[in-house]
Image 1 (cartoon, helix red, strand yellow):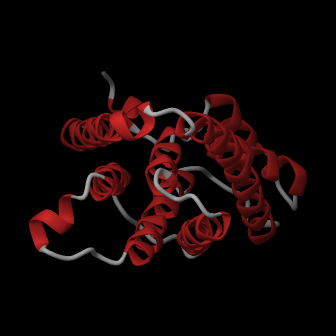
Image 2: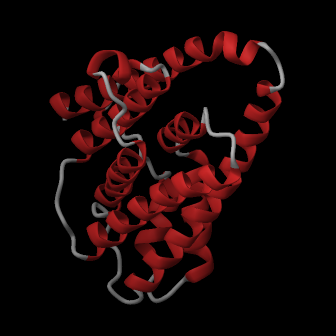
Length: 213
């Protein structure tokens, strides 16, 4: 496996070439790229699955998804616009850790181990910051034109939120259907074990990339 394959926030070669060639404000294309990134970003989707797994009320889902969006958007904008450096592999390893953290939370691990429940809203916001910074580190490697940069970044963020809503809608439909069957509670622990395993796999891939890069 090459080091480049370990990026969870990968951008296709075609999209990368397009981003590097254009200049000026390109609102619609960047909205599309942002939406595409979220819908195909398996690290984001895994975390969102963990976040909403036991959320039943629309108001609760809205709060948690909004916190994630605030964190994601903030570090993406700030990281790219101010060119804040960070190692992409290590950031993406933390993103993998976010999936593990949420899976363990859903399994009730922290109440058993620590005797109390950590603030889930704060955790969602904090990990949202890392998710956004993960993509920021990738975008920083491209030679983006300064002309229209802020406008394009905002458009990209709008696309990310549109993609997040689309992905969330699909996830909610599947989970809602599953919740109607007795197997949901019977296999919820196993499902989160698989989610945790996926998170550890992401961590392993990113750390491998870090050491072989």
